[in-house]
Length: 85
View 1 (cartoon, rainbow, N blue to C red):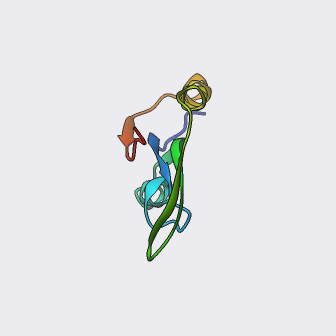
View 2: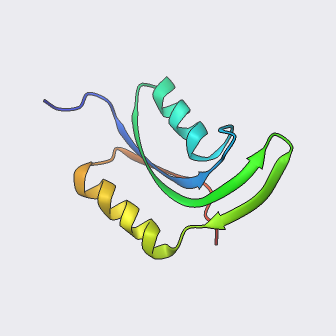
C-alpha cells in the first residue's frame, strides 16, 4: 500500500532542547500530516539560555545517512537547516 503521507527529508542540526533543528522540523512535519526522515549535520549542546557546544558530523557520515534514507524512501520535499560548514 502506498504511503498517503508526503515524505519530507530534513537535513539539519540536532537541538538538544528540541526547540529548533531537526526536532522542531519533525514536529512541524507531523502537524501537517507529513512523514519526516532526517540526516543530521551537527550535534548541539544547548538549552533555552544558549548553545554551549557544537560537534559537526563528518561529510562521510552525513553521506551515509543520506544514502540510507534515499535507498528506501522517495521524497516530496527537502528542508535544509543548519549546515556546520
